[in-house]
Length: 369
Image (tube, rainbow, N blue to C red; front, side, top):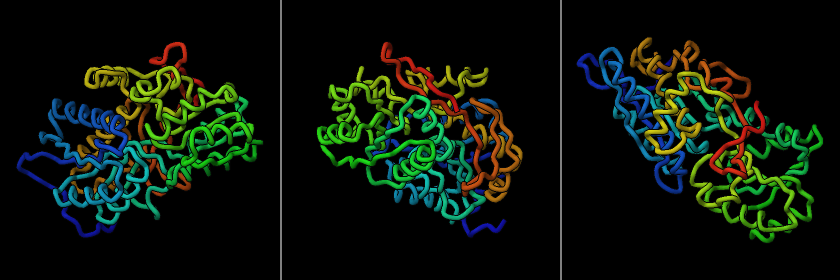
């Protein structure tokens, strides 16, 4: 592998810490609650590694940078972290932000283990420098489309904002549904909630998917649809996972229940997942989302890589195909997957779940991929 010129992030012999750069959305317009869960998982795993003696006696140090859902800010953070000598960069939740970080990491020759973003095309060209834990959008959203078909929902409307992520998701849904008798109607999120409801009635849509930001405009859209008696039978869905977090339930109450979304957890956690989940719950003060588990798994992977391959950046990047780590949700290995430009864990477990209308703090598993 040819290593582009960059600070080495490499070998120390004085017992100093091994730095990992962490990209996390911690302020608006970033999805702050997702960032908080991601950071909780990263930080818990770092603490556990250090409590167990670190990496050959050297502690891990997490150097956190807030991306605030801003691609340019994320790219600048990768520059800064590379200059600080991090062995690798981890994290990020927003797909468009992760894409900018991945491009910069690839250009600088800094390993980037993406924790949670799903956009298929994280880099324009295949790269050795980037690996990903979250499932690709084309994989997870096809599972969601299968759920819609099994539920008898074939006239699908999507309300969407301009974004490569939402556009990609719409394309995945349309490509999967069309050969199976499904249709996808795109509605602009700039429509007033009342006009949106009228369009749904006119189309005869049986499902409305929210491909929009939270809380705006998702919350007023859900309230309008739930309050329109003409749409009493329509399914409201959010494949990107907005209802996963407590903020959704707090904003919408009963209206936020019964909204199916994608979650990357197995039907039942094993002993490791149960233990980590308990620790995360204590740390967060609430049930951990799948994003928190992604954070923990990220550090578990890199700790194993650092123990076996050292801190040289090129050696870390070259190790992706040899990773074999027990994660919280399933054993983790990376491979080359058709259509995916980075090293990919194929695949984490995928569920379609919703909040139980009878008990909105409880999740119901509706479909398993």
